[in-house]
Amino acid sequence: MEEDRLKPSESPSLISFVDADIMNGESVVLYSVDIDIKAGDFVYIVGKVGTGKTSIIRTMTAENRLEKGEGKVCGYDLKTLRPKDIPFLRRKLGVVFQDFQLLMDRTVYENLEFVLKATGWKDKEAVDNRIHEVLKDVGMSTKAHKMPHQLSGGEQQRIAIARALLNHPQVIIADEPTGNLDNETADGILKLLRGINKDNGTAIVMVTHNRNIFEKYRGRIFVCKDETCEEKKADEVIDLSLTI
Image 1: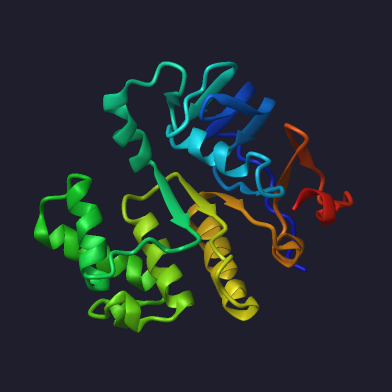
Image 2 (image 1 turned 45 degrees about the vertical axis):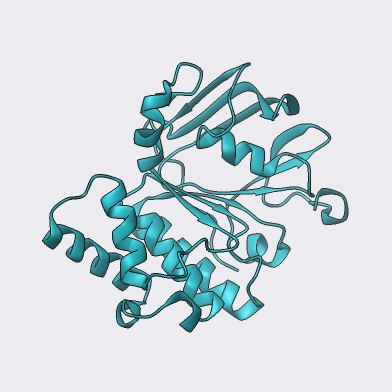
């Protein structure tokens, strides 16, 4: 089993919720949530369907509003965040989805180029260099010319992680990134994320229901249950029959 994560950084919090109510539409799904995430943290959010895991992520990315409590993400106050500033907040986050969400009519290179151009990159040489850097980081250097359908599920997820890395995010948010992958491929994705976490100090926030993952690759664990989200210690028994 991997060693526990390093001691928390003394740097300011990247993500902080204090007594925050998490909304899903017009309804509160989680009450009085307290979360504090710093550089170098590896955080799991677990819970059965409908317990608010994804709502937490959507609040972090300013898709869901925060009406009660305090919430700050990468220096932005979610309570006072102006709509025009949301794209700047999201550039500090890299988001990875279960279903990859690649553009199927474009090559790997064109998928990554699209994101860079959409986020303000204009210099062609800089764009080209950054694309090749992130593909190397995820072990996909030879796949730039491929179409997504020519790649395996694991390879597509690696490209999705490369996409998340493009703008040097402070936090990677991964929503069930291994949900559509077999165990061996999922293990490779976790090793990749752990490497990014260790080498770059990038905080990782990962939703998962896979016990094998958070037992083998230790991190902080927040359990969503009964309209609450509470941190559990690594040695506490987490009853997945109730929480997943």
